[in-house]
Image (cartoon, rainbow, N blue to C red; front, side, top):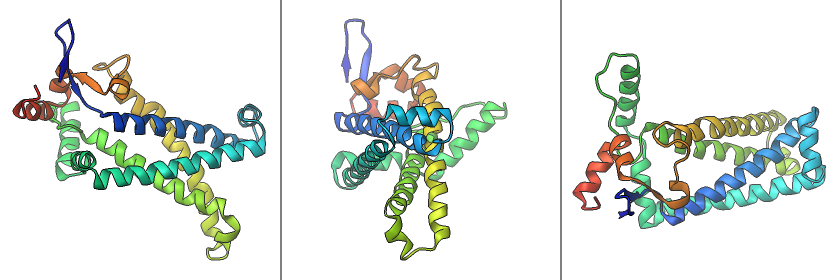
Length: 231
């Protein structure tokens, strides 16, 4: 917990380690999206412009594969950190999907249509954050597996039917497009353009959020922090 001359109390929400991981993932996904879309849409003006901007077809491929290797390294490190570090274990417990998340989702729907009197009360992460985390995890896994098969196409064809490679091509391209759209619209809106944080949630840079925001958006987490003496 920290404060400033205005009396506003701040609470840490993202540690330095998670902020570094978040920024690296963000940059890597943007690079992969731009170099991937250049190939996916190579037959129109948008794709051709990206290819020229990225230094040509061959250099585009080099950048895409280098970023893919970096993404795989990040995935391995993140999994290790979440499973074996003390902080990671705490975060994994917080972000783990539970029956309560389904109940919260259904209650939010009922509240929005006027059949429930109270909006669900969230802990550190609500169902939206959890869905984004696990959706991103699953999406990156699919993109990685399909990308590896396509990269090692000759080797893959020795063991896998061509139909599988064709499916990998579809999954790799459209899963990447889906991930980019979700990142661009849903994640950015929820985390930065939502009225409660507009124009930006600074926690991805500073690691801290206002305690009042925690009280309003994550009341169960607020109560927990008070019990622990953090607030």
